Image (cartoon, rainbow, N blue to C red; front, top):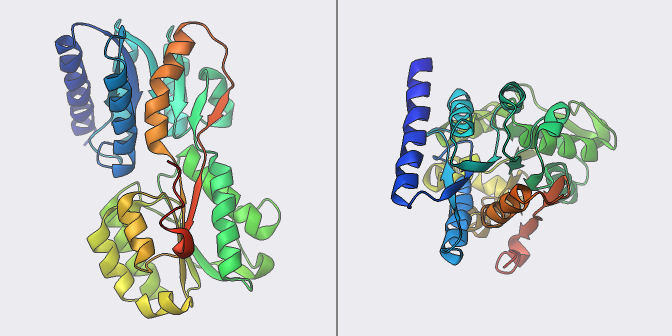
Length: 330
């Protein structure tokens, strides 16, 4: 299995190398995401592509890559290590799937080129290793999700949180923001604070897999027929709209009456369709296209030696049924 991961990582970097040779050897500004199978990250790619289209005469080219699967944490680390050893790569933006492992790599390699994070950050102890972070205030994202939950369920209730990879710093920050806001204090788990209790078996971890996320939702609904709230800290289940519709069909009457509420992260088109259809009650969205579009410019500024803020936030959108057609930033 490990060999397959390394081969997949090598293939991704090989594709990047091939692209570089056909682009008349421009220097590379690399963006490495957790997995190419996640439509959220494709929005980062589209932002990168827009930047390239607007900067055709630049000496730099924006390259987007990552492991084939978001579950391939070792593959992502290998891709980053390979890129850091390439002389044409002049800066790199990383969305670390396994933040401690990525920090260990950067500390060991000690790259001479600027390293920044995008979408997801390194753990706090390793943030001296990157020049800046470009992306979402993930703790605030969890805070906003909690506020919507409390508005929809003012008396509290039973809740299940669905998370991604165990070691993903951005997902863990959202979960902390949600729990701390609900409880009114820092807690590791909701055990009755302000009427809210996490059910047994939760949180569940999707490892960023769409099919697993939907299966987990179905299992939680079956095991907890009186569940009051399900919180998708990331949008994984909704990225598979057909499967998500089938899962929510079994509880659609509860969703319609708000006996059960669903709050989810991200606002990609299929997620907005789910909101319109009453298959969620609130979506708190990031701005991945903006991340991909701004990252090359930030990397160029780092190459030029400019001092940037250690954190550059890209903002959040809050979408509900009553503002679904106007909630997204243009």
